[in-house]
Length: 436
Ligand SMILES: NC(=O)C1=CN([C@@H]2O[C@H](COP(=O)(O)OP(=O)(O)OC[C@H]3O[C@@H](n4cnc5c(N)ncnc54)[C@H](OP(=O)(O)O)[C@@H]3O)[C@@H](O)[C@H]2O)C=CC1
Ligand SMILES: N[C@@H](CC=O)C(=O)O
Image (cartoon, rainbow, N blue to C red):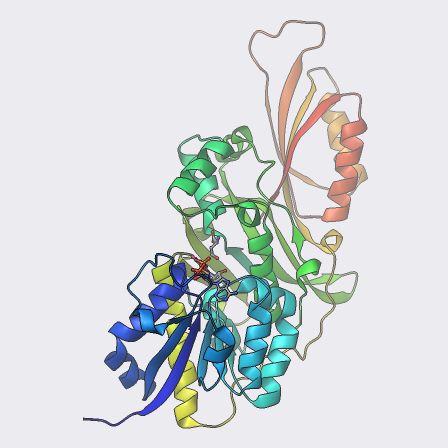
């Protein structure tokens, strides 16, 4: 029988993820000890309401409301409370006491990451966060370790399960956004208040984390351009499918050159993805992160992006890594933010666009529209026109669907302004980016 050294593990939060982590620590005690090379003793689970019903059976004597006391003397602290406070203060307290910290909290990392990593570095402790992006999907460690010798050029991520589920329903079942959101709520994917999901805040926090890691530069949350999916209509999604695309809420993080300035851009918005792209096949509440690196080429990381059990898997992987370092000794892995590339605004980004216009169905209209695109240096790749049947009235209209070649955001914005002001355009129905 192997005698392991014992490490004290404190879990803060006993909700969807925390309750699963606590149970797995208890149930898989021996297996985890063998993998970590140390016994992982669950010393307590801090919650807000000790009498609340839990998803798993956590022994009552392990439940406490005193998170501060629980941290004292812990070797590893697992923060699964979420949000900014008290999570931030508790993480700082744990690191300050020399404990390694594991968190799944993208909100606190995206808004206070540098402060937390500096606190960890000062005491030589570890701050691990594999579950903060993509739930169960291993993406943090591949970016930090496996690709450390490469140069990441671009990341395209489906990093919010709720919105992917909604968009998938709109695409495959013809649901409206409201219908799909109601179903996502019924199935427990969406939060009670789904604003962070559908307005893109959750994905923006994850984009800030991914971009910081991939480009070795601190990308603050407020530098991430964010658009949610609330303005999307069923018609836009169906029209995209007819044109050979599927609409996804994407986190796009890229290294770009804007007029000779090399920098980093991070944005979250709905985008059209060609049906042939691997991201188009990500259905339901799944997540996927598509990484383009200079030497490695294209890599795709795919799996369950949310849910208590899958997320607990990523958390426990971090717990084992932290335990192994305790056993082996030596310094931990420092976050590398040495590159300090400038963060460029969305206007510096370039992409393709899918534009739907309602126009007058008259001779010369196509030429006028083409001229407006060309005046702003936006090249048109494809145009298709449909004319509704049985139009009454003096001025018949047609629907134009235009896909552009790659163009600067600023050029496309100027084109859309000109289109909206043109007498031949009745309305700019939709403008969506095309990625992948
Ligand atoms: N759920 C998921 O699918 C995923 C979650 N995450 C992240 O994991 C973290 C946890 O999420 P999740 O488990 O869903 O969250 P829950 O809301 O289900 O659980 C939060 C837990 O924190 C406890 N808590 C809240 N405030 C305090 C406090 N002041 N002191 C002590 N305990 C407190 C709550 O106690 P009580 O139960 O008594 O109310 C509850 O047990 C979040 O950062 C989230 O973003 C990441 C990936 C996926
Ligand atoms: N609300 C999030 C859960 C995990 O971060 C999602 O829907 O992906």
